[in-house]
Length: 165
Image 1 (cartoon, rainbow, N blue to C red):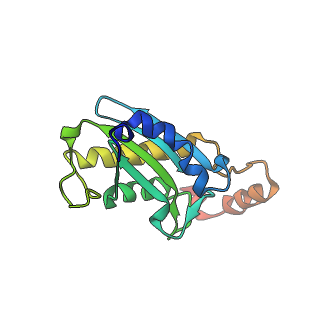
Image 2: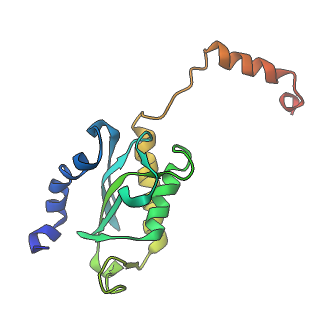
């Protein structure tokens, strides 16, 4: 990788081309963009309609380096747990930028595995940022409470013992 390719700004510019290769429509992607004093998280996650049978559609980059981290992949899965079927995985292209002293890239010879100084903090940020992006996207199914079928269900439960609690 050339030095300029490690620059997060360069990678962010390249990201415009990456998702188009793996999705049917760019409308299936939700932009993620959040930062604080600790780290910056940018990229795209798939809509709730875009899920795969394995985690091969989930791409994570830390300071420009492609990584494979089980905990962060689990954070992505948890962010989507309520929105996609069990056993399916969301699509994601996530770029994390943080102080190099906060990440150890010398865990594995291929540099694909890393160790974070504050792993729980990164885990929580990934989960929270991705889940918030999905919720804010407006792509979740909505229930019309005025639908007669819904009202029938409510009336059905009115006489039950649960309604008296």
